Length: 335
Image (cartoon, rainbow, N blue to C red; front, side, top):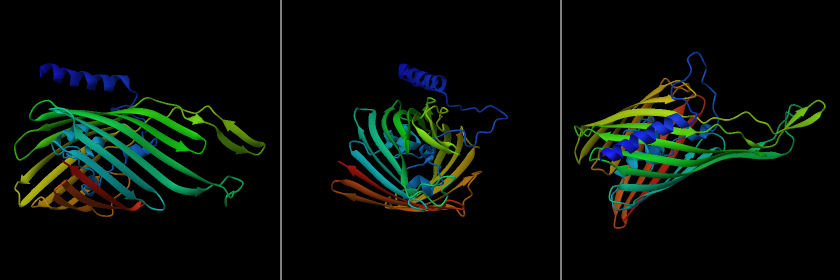
């Protein structure tokens, strides 16, 4: 067991020292708008949306591959766990996610995830044709990921993600390989648990393709681009259950988020369950640039069937500029 713990420490040190994302920013420098691939910061599940994003310590389903890969060790033992979600934003913008997790060893788990974001069809405009050229274009992003997690002790587990991410624009594309590391520790008192996650560690990369820039003397092709970094995030959180029971159960969670391209934020959330069938959730994120209109809210419903189990979750968030965000998640636990 000592050797396994040393391996985890080695992996953590290697990730922190070989990638270019900064955990501690340079003082006096502005971090806002300093990275690309912003879609990597979009969570996939309705449950965490309703909890205001305070999920790194709770993560215990397939969506843990995003929040804390160590959390997939808490999925239903001996089953294949399938998860799908869809998010609707303003305009024609939408995001979709799917993932699957299975136990592959006595103490090890393997997962696969895919995320896609579509911004709809947009009208092309230029400085000289501000009302449109008559042409349209589309922008899309996606990532594919493989997750491995293992239980080290009765209270400690770790997980690691490897993802391929793509950000596509007309005639230009950005590709990167990313890594995430998650740790989870269960104290055992009042179901208290702690979670730590280092997300989106990637190398600086240059976009590929050709960009046309219109000037008064004609168009110019640009092929030499500035390198693009990814939005690394460090998260640490805690959760506990002040009320524990089959009929009534209450979970309280708090979390600190430290992104490399913005200010720190803080999240709090609460989840109440009735007979492990009906769930009510609420949460709030503090210090965010984009203010909440009111706390995020959500409900959930879990139904046990002969094949395993079915879970339906809905999350809602209202913001001043982004407007209302609706997310639906469906999870299947198959024996």
